[in-house]
Length: 135
Image (cartoon, rainbow, N blue to C red; front, side):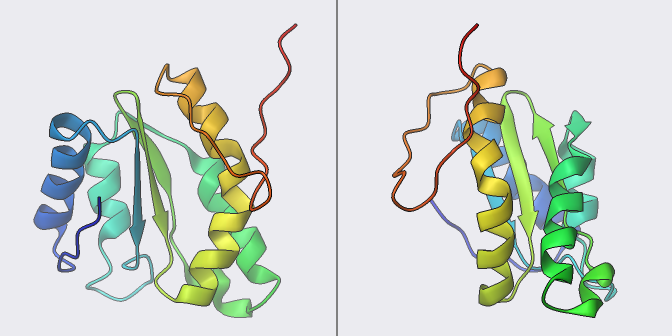
């Protein structure tokens, strides 16, 4: 499922709530609205609706982006948990989306496993998820 919505905090918040609480999405990925401009409010909307934040996702995305552009320090990508769903904010440019998603996605299936969400099947020829072996 995908939706295109405006850069308005209340609309972003309500859309995330609807996707998680009503549509039962275990993973919500947003693109754009993570910069320093006044209209970039996606991180604020995400933080407002999440129960807990997952700072490692944003840290890794910025570290990955810094390999390509020094202005990556201006980005405010974040991620958080609402119930048993993971919400990830990605940057808005397609090249940056790919770089950041490639960096964080290996942890996504295991995160959802830990939250007792559905088992995510992955095409390991595209990207290999990290799942620790059972002890």
